[in-house]
Length: 482
Image (cartoon, rainbow, N blue to C red):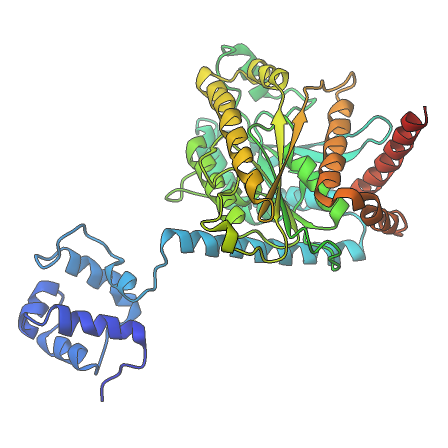
């Protein structure tokens, strides 16, 4: 009796018995040139009395696509594609994005449970990384906490981690090799707590790598450190259980550079709304090309593709941040619906907050970061292109609403605690929330803020946000009265 219950294998049978019907079983067996494929095997496949094992498909694909019967490249996935077992690139990326969502939602829930048992989430992350590092017996790590924030409201925003080999006999290895080996050994804990490679992150210590950088030509990038950053302010989080803003399904925060601090602004917006939060940078942290650390261009392209996928299918009740100069349609802002008049949004328009860098901020970034002419041109061209897309999207506000907020350049402050920049981030987040929620901003935000302020064990970031919003409200009321 023919076995045709599985439609995927029916496609394989149709290929052997239909597409290749001009060849005899013996001729097909000779084309496969495989000792396990005989004329009788072909007869059984044609009758549906048998089929190859899944584990044999790559070998058989190689054999078949190497034969004279196949016109094209050798492809070990040939039969797997025929069975529909290999998704196309868009489907694969969409599935990967969905897996990322489930992983960090479950991770966030686990972290919530851990925090309910012990209120030490910020120190627990770094402590776990340090413990895992020493357990390898191959690596040592130095830690510096970053205490920053608006003036008078400083809090623990991040930890900077410098890794070193314990044994000197590996000192000749390249930085790329060292990084790959470090991440192979520590990937689970680095990924879980959102540690991001940040070789130029500022610290107060002077390492051997810092000294080498100072001796090098100023034009050479300072990337000779195995330095990572654990940013507590932009840790991934899942949405609160309640959803009072059904007309705001999701929010994207975008910028051409990291000058406006898009991730921190987006994270603050998420906290104000009670939404989940993630960044394309964090999701792309584990991306590899043939098991190798990708180049900057490869990583930026992958992040842009991730962002495009989220613009196409945004996660409900999430705010995400993306930074990049790839402004092709659909890679920075959403594309126009094919038929806007006959396309109904699911619950409300996607809100996109564009933190538009003012010219002075771009100039300061070019000088301070040593950006080359190509990078500077990409930023300036990107701004022009995005402005044109914003004008086009303004005609379909029921599908997407783009809120443009100009971002000025501010200094780090006199004490390295970046008070002015944090003030700017809080101000941008509040302004964005006002634009997203409209006239009901105060009525919507106040209950949520009141709930945060009465928590028994307040998250330090929530505490800072509540205090800043209260201080800012008093300041604005005072200005209005005067």
